[in-house]
Image (cartoon, rainbow, N blue to C red; front, top):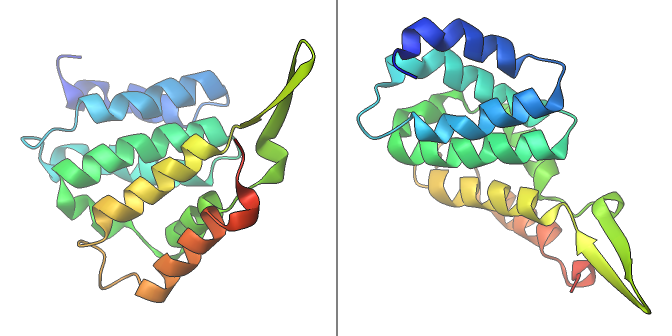
Length: 159
């Protein structure tokens, strides 16, 4: 990609696509063009659209969006001004263990349980970890404790 401003409409169209793979690929690619030398002004409408992907119904798209948001918040700390109450509620939802995302695979005579939601929860906790010092005025510490408790409670251990 040579000119970000030139390609911004295409990126925004891809983020709003009905195709999950297109949204996933676009969300995952954000982390590669937001470096410490990128100004927030040059990517602000793109970052705002990425923050909205946390509301997507597909957990794979949410994971890709959070992975890129982790990189963006680390490299462009001012991007946290897009964090609002609705985003924090959606982030809290991604921190929860979801039994419907636990898949059971039969491997011959053995059964193996795979928690498909674990990478999403890891991405959510990473976002909280990276953004913690930047969001101290928007997040109460008791909220963080509650999310950790919901995400890594004793009864949710899948090996």
